[in-house]
Image (cartoon, rainbow, N blue to C red):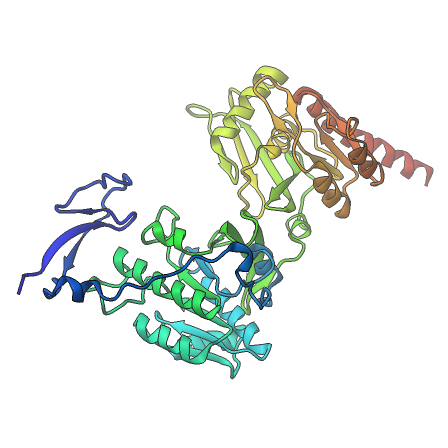
Length: 477
């Protein structure tokens, strides 16, 4: 009988090598090559090894039968939004996130919601005991007789129970802790994760049961295991947020049944993950009326979110000036500081600049450039921006402002929350009659600025105009 052999497998991409290497030659990751024992297979004849040949005839596309069932609501509107309207029958969903971010809590609540509708839900607790999961279910209010807990780590036992029970939802917590007996490597390895996910995918497609997989993430923030895992599943969701913040963002990065880059907002409380239906109002609830504060409208998927950006500009005391950014890209901040210095004339080269996005948000789209720049200018000259003003626009290196997409949707969201003035670059409203009519019907004043210098002047003068009107009103009273 042949002896077992060893090979080195990359835990990121699955590349195999005969000897250990510090860096994978396929994906370029460092220190990901793990030694794996390859068990030899008994010799057999070619005919016995190949087995019978199964012929499959192609099917004409119009003749393929459609799914009889519609999307199933999860009981969480924010999760349904991220999934594109709910769980599709037979879909395989991967949920990733850092430890303690709320992945298990969210999925246990969803399983409890499905059980409350009269259907059965199967929760595979491969990391915890049923007693631990029950305690969490009691705290979350998800304890229900039709919620079944399966303490199993063998994928064959899991698929057997899925075939026998035919539940409405299956949650596997987590995919890195289940294993198959057909592979000798340890749970969580590339081969184990890939083979277990493949078996679950086959069961989901055959039984039309949606299966949700909870996955660990690496220190780089990616789902642990081979990249093929993300290609195999139908949807990939990431639960993000600061450990010391109560807000959580559920971000969709892949979805075969809906739009990508959708975002659901949750608040972590003692009784679980609570949907935030109006995140903009929640983020602006504690907004201060100090200098260095500006409100921007960021598009997260198809949802416009109003977020406050804050800036603090102080003279540099020791060493070189510092630029610290929390929630925005630091290189983008340095570009805005250069434009403010060169094109607007603000002497920021000897100033320490600190920029923060309230609520732990990460703003990545260029449409928030104008709001960040206005917050910096406001704090530098010690003149505040009007409380009812929103800034929209991308800043170019020449100091020009460029139009942003979905202007009408952003403005409508701002008006809904009580904002009455919008500083934006010259839009297509004058050329597009439909857009002009829709904006004209809103109770909002669109202040157009072609350059960043014009936008700074308009934004800083807006607060003075408000103060003057208020003083006149007080005098008349």
